Length: 410
Image (cartoon, rainbow, N blue to C red; front, side, top):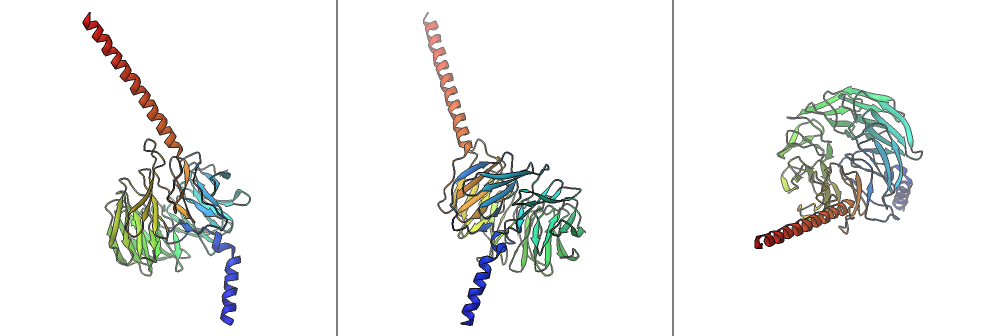
């Protein structure tokens, strides 16, 4: 009886907790980068496209039934996930390639001028932390501290009011996004080094690779997984930084890994154009899917599927066990292809991704259904014009041949 009462009490506490269901504290929602949330009971999955006005390289964050994303021009957009309509927008007056995170009703995002904190309910900036260089690193929020890297080579920690609590110079440019687990901060730098730090910024260990590190680390099986532009995926022990395994992916690895702890899989893209599935325990390659163009996108996972995007302008849904293609969506309709470096996210049955074509897309991942892109109509219009021009040219050629025949008879 006591056990039953305890279970009921725990369920009650979890049901009223505002943080567990709503926060998006890190890049791709968690330190495995699965990019997946269950939808609310009243959410309806629909197909739509939304014009955000300028190219997007950052990845979305989700709060309740809204999706938040920042364009390269530095304009924050709040979009209704059911219909793609704009709720509101906020101009940072500063360009941005950083993805946003959400904690306790406040959105945090890096810009060319520093870190911005936005009150979502009031739709305005709460405070700003200025830096001397651009912040492309996606923040990580934990224990009321916001950690992020900067192109000035510093890792910063701020409290909830924007006051600096940690400032450690690591060198290079910190474009990689930090993650925090086991009371440690993990982040890479363009100076080829990967760092494990204590929460006060003091050093625990350093692991050196053959080239700069842009990839954001992921955590699984007591290990940290990340890529380097030396073409290698690395798995290092979280406690001492010793190499557990490495895998040669043939080209720069700017993408970040997604870890499926349940099936011991690691999914990671490379500039060689492949999404590769490796065994989390030993790095053995299970399968590789070729797109023919760099894969900067970090995959999202739902049940038996893995979704990601490529710089060839396509979004893909694959079987996560075999790498078999289940859906390919080309919003640019071939003629208007734009790179898709943004990472997709999944809410329930809806798959969302943004493109450098300035659009945000919503697909149905369960029905494998896609919206009709506006670029399809543009492509059809161009094809129609081409056909009309060809018909006119053919008629003129035939007409000139008839005239020549008449002249020859004369």
